[in-house]
Image (cartoon, rainbow, N blue to C red; front, side):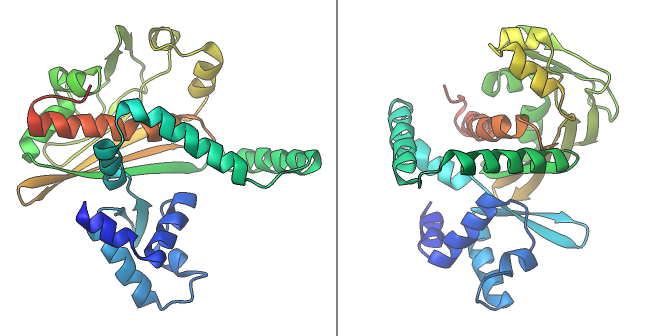
Length: 280
């Protein structure tokens, strides 16, 4: 936590985080654009952010993509903002944004909406990626069990998987009493203690009813290109570095939903492995 505060103290590093918040997954060259700073200096700032776990990187061919990592900020919030205070804090933040936002006339609103709709339609075939990195005081074997054993996953996630985990094998998802299965709901990668990947579940009417999702939202989710999630495990001293990469339909709704859900799930996973009890 000390390293996160030190990293955030520098305005340039905060600016780099702002740029990743606005558009995640940028290369060093893209992050340097528009900054009156040498490439080497930007690289050093990014190294500090990466050491503080505020930025995580993913190799894509010869390029290294940088992603904003919410884990340290989430840990700070968990420590000083209780679940009873969180709603009040969010409400005050929403009020502050509303009061500070410059007014718009109806014409500007209409133009903005039209432009956004056009952009969304054009980008519908692109992917949007969520990346989250956390360090868990455990072993790769124990973490692997927590990701694949239905008795484990149910404790911190509320989801149980039915599969033999062989690449190409089908998966069933059971959540809040509803089981979903589909030919495209499959295991993609299975490298024990190193990497696991699978496609996301199907948004069936049974799943929606069990989880309180209305039909309009369910139909919207079901129309999106199926997403996929990858878990990368890397030993790091007496800890394991876990990187979760979830790729979505760029024009879809699921990205915003899962981006809010993953930090809570992974915090509960970390707490379960390190203390024996998941978060409430």
